[in-house]
Length: 88
Image (cartoon, rainbow, N blue to C red; front, top):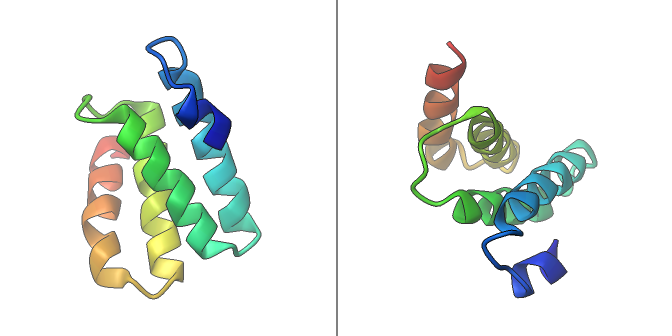
């Protein structure tokens, strides 16, 4: 993912977000919480101000879950509410 970030061009942004989401999910599953937060934030940064779609909702949800697991509940609430609103 870091190599994609360094070489980011308009054609690679979607792949960068997708790979960062996958890396974040894997890090979260392995309880590498700092790494998971890093990857989810990377993916969210790539998505920018775009409207919430399925992929962005998964990124936001993953970030919220990682923050909760990292005992940062107050930071997680806004992300989780946004994801729940989309999936509802």
